[in-house]
Length: 263
Image (tube, rainbow, N blue to C red; front, side, top):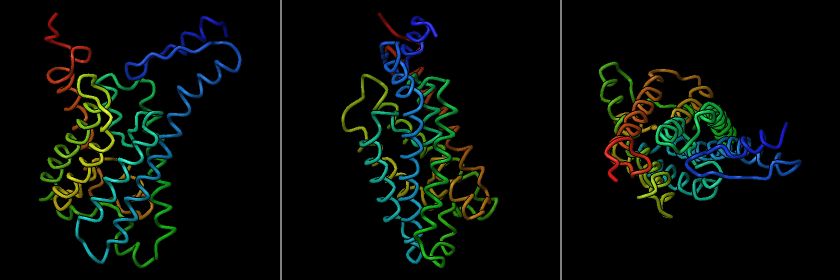
């Protein structure tokens, strides 16, 4: 590969930050690894850790169906993982968040599918590890932390709407806190974690407050529970589209907004 071609790959823009690396030999290989491979590995690792903690909090909370333990465990775990690994991959750990980030310019389109694949695989690993360390009785009493809040068709509409609204809050916290230059800040990991805690406390009894297809997919595979599983894909992905529209057309900064930019 020529030096010019290598340089063009290393100059790909991800999330509005352009990184230039020397294009020869090991330096170019390091650029390739850090720009393409390492973020996917981090998304897999972070998703596995986050979903392991989340699943375990639900399984161990099986005899006490209150929402406080899962809400705190999910929120604190996500904030911690983002603070630790977010500077490498953006700290998505959620297909819906990755879609929203791509729509507002925080993720290159070519990385969306690799991110989704890494996140879903991480969800599988996290859910499987939660099963390994849990007692069989607790695991099956909690259905392996698979989402079982929706039991009847009459609950579906409310659950879908809840997932859209709850995921909108989460995706806004991510996109406005880490991508939009006017509002980004160092407290973003904690704000994102708090949004998950608030969402679970508010909507856990309505839809389960999944907000993350990887969180639904991993436990569903491990426990083989697929009832109303589609809700946890449709709701969060629709929320991502809504957040993309809100930021691109209305509340994003001048660099992100597509209309009414002013001078």
